[in-house]
Every structure is written in structure tokens, then in C-alpha cells.
Image (tube, rainbow, N blue to C red; front, side, top):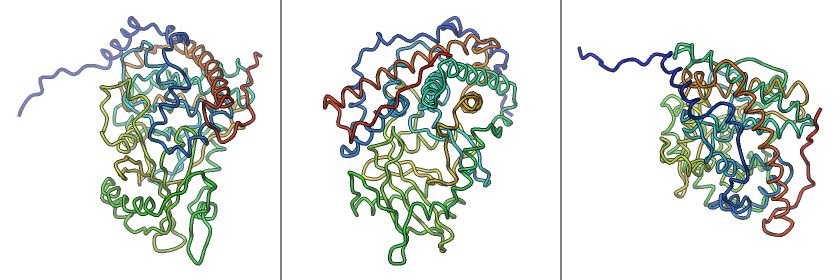
Length: 451
């Protein structure tokens, strides 16, 4: 029997390694960010990031981003990636969501049929500095909190509650057996999440069939959307053909169940803010009966906005595979039909559409709801980083006091203020004709009150 001569590095030693990272970057220094250090034009960077997208749809994206500072933030992940990249970081790596914000968590149906609440968007995910996710989520809490009518004091309290829960949860994860961590599911249902889960319960396949389709000549077809882009029959045929390669990315037993469904119709959708302009096909399928509909989304996935700044991040060459594997790394349970495919040299993620999915809304984030939701965000993000990184080292850096919490409170408010200025710059660019929007919506400014 061959003996393994590699010495086990203890958890205590890994905690000490994490603690030593404070010598490289003090926790309170994580608050630092200076917009004067930018070496790029904001509008130019955002325009460049749209390369390869459908030009006719981009005015829709700019309209959605121009509606509010938080709307701008949702579509500006490339901008924040450029802002975060020059900042010093601990060097501790984990699978990062990349676009960690309050609306990229939500409810969905787990493989065992339960409704769960977790991070559910990994379009920008890579292995990278864990604190980038924390900083993006902190800024989103300030922006979404302001939009819901909270004061800056309430937003800052929510950010510190988010980071405190992230830190306390990381301590707990650092002490768990790894097998326990692998199957750990957060089931705590605070009031804002109860609201989301109630909506998710109503999002049944039959409800979606009624909402998304109409019956024409005995056939269910997707409702027509008024879009500045019309999908060709060739595109529809290619989307259907791509499902064959996709099925090979599924586990054999899941591929068997998928094979029982047959295509009824194909549509094209525009969803979200960050993804506008990407090719996004939806497929209606039936399992031999009208009461057994399945909605599949085939979503184009370009490279992550963080890719230029993380050239050594281990990642699959196929961008759909990158996103699918990121979800599996950070979630305990993922969509049973999660996979990937290619169409015309472009990479796509494939997953179920609206399988009991639901997300947070502004009304859920008023007052105490913002803090409750922030606390859950902290625990969920901590779980995702602990699963994919080294929880002992992360806890070693974070420690037991509130230095990092306070730093993120300051960073979140500072970056939210800068985002509001960037949003105003976009609106000026639209008025000047430098950026073409479908229309310039009425401004929904951040409500920055100091109670």
C-alpha cells in the first residue's frame, strides 16, 4: 500500500494563513475606493462591453439602465469589474457570483421538489477574490434600499447586518465537516423571503402555460412580444437542433426524462437588464399531455465581465458550461435540467424557465425588511464562498470583530453615491445622442435621507 507523504494542513493553520492576509490588506482598508483613480471613460467602457450583442435591442438596455441608479447598477457589471480590479485584495479566492446584487437571489424548485431560496444568477461567475462579491452586494443593498424609500442610515445598517451574518456564518462553515457543508441548505424564511416563496408557489407549469402562451388553431404558441428584433425561422430551427447536444450535458437519468418531452413552439425573449442584447430563446415542450408542459430557456453566455482581470482563473472554455458549473459550485441544489449547448459558434446556458421561480421586489425591502433580507444575503453568499473556497482561511481573515463589517458599510454607501453619478452621466449621454435609448424614462432618483 502506497503511503501518502503529503502532510495535512490543519484548519488552525489555514485560519492562521487567512489572518496573515491582514498584513497585506487591513480589514478597514477594504473601505477604500477612489473614483479619481479611474483610467477609463464610463460611457465608453459600457458601450464597448456590448460588442457582439444584437444592436437593435441595445436601446432597450439603455432605457432600463436610465430608469434609476439601481437599474443602472444592474446593467453595469463591466463597470464595477473595472473599478474593483485595481484594488488590493487578500489573494484568497472562491467561486464568485460576479453579479452579486439583491435581485440575483430568488426562489426556485429544487430537484426534490422543494422550493428553496438561493443565489440564482451566475452569468458573470469566475473564480476570483471573494471580497468582490461582498462589495457588489453591499453597494446593491444601498441602491435598492434607497429605491425602496429607506434612509442612508437604514441602508448602512442593512449592509453591516449583511456582512456580520456573512462573517458569523463563515465561522460556522469553517468548523463544519466538509460533507456537512456540501449538503448544507439554508432554509430560514424571513418575511421578505416568505413573500417571494408565495409568488414562487403560484408559478406552476400550468400557470406559466396560461401566462406565456395562447392557443392558436389547436396549438399552444408563445404570446407575441413587441420587440425591435424578430427571430427568423432559421434561428428557431437552430435552437431546436441545439437541444440534442444539450441533452448530452445532462446526467443520464435526467437526459432520459428530458427525452420524453417534444417541442411545441420556440420564442425569443428579452429579460433582465444586464442580459439585454444577448440571444435568448425559450422553448415550449410537452410530455405527451397538455397538463405536462416544460419551458426551457437557451440563453447566450459571453465571457464574464471579470475575465480580462482574472486571466488565470480556472474556467471551462465553453461559457455556458462555465455558468452551469458555477451554479453547481455555489448552490447545494441546482435545476435538474441545467446544461449547455452551442449555436452558430456562440455558447449558451440551458435551464428551465420559470420553474417556480420568483424574486424580491422593492416593497419587500422597506424598513425592517431590508435588514432581514440583508442578513439572509450574507448567509447565502457566505455559503457559496465556503463551498468553493477555503472557509477556514476566510474566517481567519474576517475574525470576530466588526472591522470588516464597518468597512463594507462605508464602501457600499460610497460606491452607491458614485453609481448615482454614473447613472446621471448615462442620462446626459442619452440626451446628447451619444447613447441611443428607446426612450428616456422619468428619473427614479435614489432617496438619500439621513435619519
